[in-house]
Amino acid sequence: MIDDIRHIQDRALAGLSAVTTLDDLAALERDLLGKTAELSGFKKVMGTLDHDARREVGAALNAAREAISEAVAQRRSELEVVAAVARAESERLDLTEVRAGGDAGHLHLVTQTIEELEDVFVGLGFSVAEGPEVEDDWHNFTALNFGAFHPARDMQDTFFVGLGGPREVVMRTHTSPVQIRVMENQRPPIYSVMPGRVYRNEATDATHLAVFHQLECLVVDRGITFGHLAGTIDMFTKAYFGPGWTSRLRPSYFPFTEPSAEFDIQRPDGTWLELGGCGMVHPNVLSNCGIDPEEYSGFAFGFGLDRLAATRHGVTDLRELASTDIRFLEQF
Ligand code: FA5
Image (cartoon, rainbow, N blue to C red):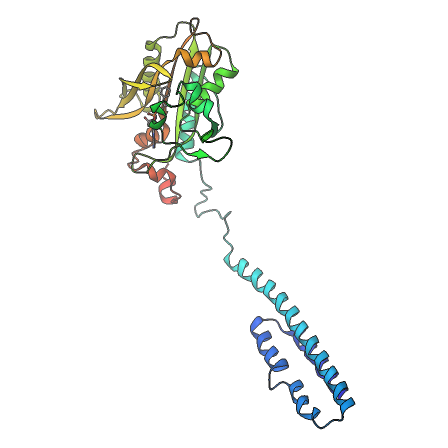
């Protein structure tokens, strides 16, 4: 009887290692360990045995059931791994697939716009600078002449980062902090442009995004006037859009420029687009960066790149620029 039990156990283990699916394993488990299993039949016979023989057969039965249960569990975990690999394989997306027609993709419209504008400004003798998107309060606000409780801080709804003290680290709300970084690290003459991504805690609509792009322009030199500012804005408007386009300035307020203005550009059809802010760099800002405002003056302007690109390419909803729809993206 003991030999029969061992024999059943050996056959069971061989059967288990031959099973290749989880369903077949579940069926085999029922056959081997269920009520109608061959091993269960021995229980009936045990009643007819004497005490010692019963103990011996009982121990052999338990050992066989245990060995088979362990082998079932072991085989189940092996087959689960096989099934998970097969599932992952069937769900695999080929992200390297080249689309029909051999179009391997191209730069995003906003990136193309940044590169084109950099070319315009580099051609005029400007250098290109960059700064971090996670900024400290000093560069994003304080050095730009926003006092601690200055109401103008609320002009730009800010995303705060949970680092440092309360409200000490922000996602930069504009590219103007890069002006500060340039002036802290470079002595005049400064002729620099600073493109980059900025963040505002704003509801999005056709003309507003929460993550968008600006290009900042900073000039600091001896004898810089408001006329240089107006001329530079008009010059780049024509260089980027074409000779039929013009610009205008309207009085405005920014804490870091004095006087300040907003500038609009006029399309050939006569309509205006509000594009950015500008002004003469405030003497406090120059002093904050260790530049003597008695000796130097400067101008700065900053504008929305997404709005600029959308206007030139006839995109009517800025949110499309953040979409991943290939039918939209491949037009540019
Ligand atoms: C500023 O951000 C100032 N730093 C500009 C500046 C620079 C002034 C240098 C003086 C000197 P403002 O918040 O107005 O200003 O934003 C400038 C431009 O960014 C806007 O005119 C607009 O074109 C664009 N812009 C602002 N908010 C959004 C938005 N939510 N989505 C898309 N574009 C935006």
